[in-house]
Length: 241
Image (cartoon, rainbow, N blue to C red; front, side, top):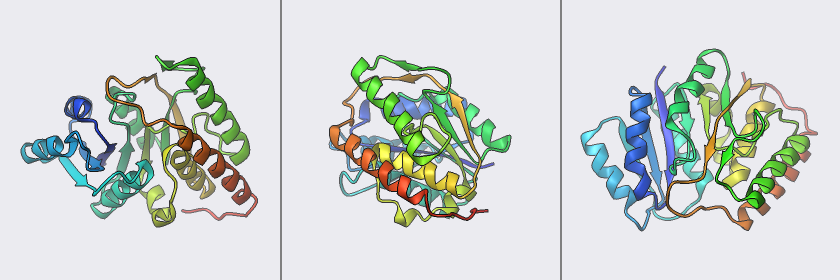
């Protein structure tokens, strides 16, 4: 099955070339789409150079910083328009290990509709996070799982693989969330449509270089989104396939 790896970027020049290399070491047949928000550090320029010599690498350069959720939506639409069967999403900062991509793909091939690379599937597998941030993340996931009814332990995780039919069934134009809330909303909508999730344990690493995009605004947006989804949970939902 044709696979595309979608990577949103903003100021990831120090990471992106090495990340592309490592992805292709583990999944040489996969294509890569970088969705860059006009990074001031020139990330898009570097990706553009790489794409000229490697037809497996593609770039969407956006006019400015528009957010993680909209970047993924744009990448998902690009993938569907070009007939990819499996769409993988991951961060650009090496918090997600490229060597885990084949495991995500294998779960899809075994029958899952979407797969989450989970920090909390087997205990807590997070390296080099401050305790405060770890506690916020862990209990945010407990809260989100309880409120939405989605049986995924890492609802806010951003390392996933999607079968194309799942993304086709979701009204991507109606996705407005970003950050953690985007991950929760996509999981919720896919699960509510009757698609089968899978969750595999991964080790999550703090970024190798650059600055984290984590903020109080992201936490607040996620909390509000969970409340909205909890209300939607009361409305019957038909299956998407």
